[in-house]
Every structure is written in C-alpha cells, then in structure tokens.
Image 1 (cartoon, helix red, strand yellow):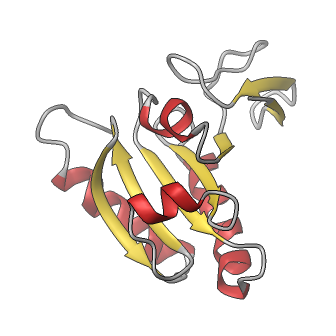
Image 2 (cartoon, helix red, strand yellow):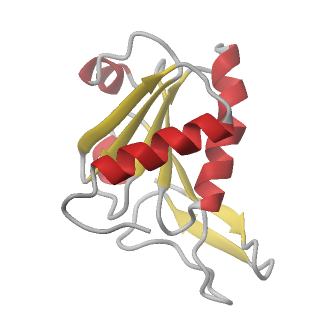
Image 3 (spheres, one colour):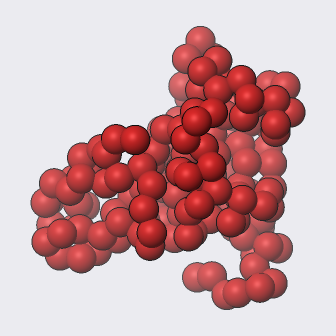
Length: 150
C-alpha cells in the first residue's frame, strides 16, 4: 500500500499520507489534520477502510462512469472539510469485484458510510456537495449513539 503526498491547507507543507494507519494523518509541520483519501481493492479494503479509526465514506465507482467523475470532486471537498473526522476510500468496482459483490453494488456511484466496518448509510447515484454533506451529517448523527462526534 502506498502513500500519497498531500499539501497542508494550513501551512503548505507537503506530507506523505499512508493509505492505512492508526489515528488520523496530521501535518508534520503545523500538526493540523490532513484530508485522508485512499484507494482500495479486494486485497486492501479490510485494512484501509474497515480498520480505520474514524468514519469512512466508500466511493464505489468506475472510470467509465460519467456521474462517478462528477461526484468525485464533491467527495474530495467533503474529505478536506472533514479532515481528521472522515476518511474517503475510493474503490474501482472493475478492479474490486469481491468488494462490489459483498456490498451488492448494482449501480455506480454507490456511496457507503462505514464506522469500524459497519454500514451506517448507503446511497446510490451522484449528488451535489450540499446533498452529500446533508446525507453524511444525518447518517453520522443517527449512528453516533455510541460516541459523540463534532
């Protein structure tokens, strides 16, 4: 599993962010939370998505899907807004047939919200960032009976 380089929005420092880690990624210079966006496949999904210590939005997408390409920037915006509180994991359904089958993905994009591997919410189809933010907030508040999230 590789790491991606993420530029800190606060100080501009370039940081290597691993696909899987304990805790949440923070800037090595100013220590602010960084957006956590990773790709996963059949072999890496458990470690990257289900092993995350924070809620995970799983984007089940395909490169040939127009709506998938439209929703991707909105999801990345949410991951940036919720740095330290949310992880975005992108799964190419063509390269991860076992994960697609496990979650019975019948249309792309399909979004899943996982918390410690448990599905809190599911949504099929593309939506604008405001609708995705609302979906996320509702799902997190409904699933937060075990702990408080801000």
